[in-house]
Image (spheres, rainbow, N blue to C red):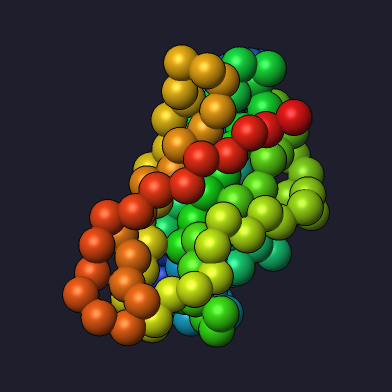
Length: 147
């Protein structure tokens, strides 16, 4: 088991492997003010360090390693204003207080999210997700150029 708590619930995880070989899992929580936690393994998942609060609010997550090894973390934001947000983390995922990028904040309700991202041929990041603006849900996407 990667994360345990008597009060916090853990689910919906996105995982990457850092350049040093660590596995880092970004985990959705319940009963924890919607904070994202991470768990880290330095032995390919045989053992896990204690979970750590990143302070990032939102879920669920998708982590994408960029060509320069930084990590693009995108997540749904299910608080007003509803939308999709992202951060670019250092390659080893050790600092979480990076600038939050608002991809959009025009959601009609908290029924949004489940983003997934990929690199495009021209070097941009495309994040797709399901969204609503007060009516029928639809699939949408946002392109982002990362410096």
